[in-house]
Image (cartoon, rainbow, N blue to C red):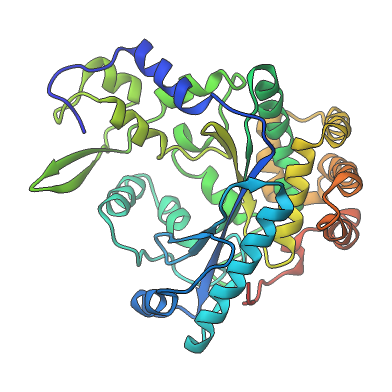
Length: 393
């Protein structure tokens, strides 16, 4: 919570960000997070009641996004196969628990017909909605109408961390294109393979654009991102004051705010409001993959982890990526709009998938091969299946 006097210098804030985000490890640990839309939409109280006390054998944590999206987060475990197995078991349990309500789970990057409406009420989400609404409708759509697969992998240490950060960002557009799965909004094709990614690109770029300057650029990125809100406490309750007049965290440290000066706790909370495609938190969060139906989310997780963790697959992927001539900053938008129809992305994706298929965990390698054959080798992605349909997880 803000203090009445200055608490941090810019250098202290920078050091704090580096300590919180950039000190990693190399243990082969993987965590997966999947989001789904419950369809048809039913009262959230009914969803909570149906899931209350449901035992999740894989130990995944269940949370709810602002539009009612159900998110399952696997525990961090060694190896992508173990993480996928845990999450798949828990997703099946959740799907079964919702079935008596007549509710299925829709896996798509953006709900194709539903009006984005916030149904989860909290002070944080209310303030976030006001903040984003100040700049247009895309923020509310992001909060309430999008869903993703998030793959969490080790950051690594020192030079390894810098290499993995760079490789992840070079891979990002290729994987986004390969797994794009949100071509419809308001019941109509949008012209984008990943309308979810397009939506993220339309909101506050100080917190959603990929950081520049390599891994070390993260510190400046965090300091120069706008402050979303200032948290205060009154009567034992948290209050969130949206900051609608642009103010970076660096400016808050330097100049203060009518509600006070930022503390280390405020800085930690600020970091939770930054949403680039890849976010360092002592590990790497790959946040750019559209939600996918089973078993394709498992294939996506296997490809991403294998290409980053297996040294042979990493080298082969890097060689394929060397042949892409477009700047990475253009690659994200091209991937979202064109998918694998872009010749460079399509060629790189095929080489990357072949590398992943040859080196993936044997439990998941057949899925990678199936995905390669069904989509990538034909320069297709799930968006080309045209209209997502409700499925059980």
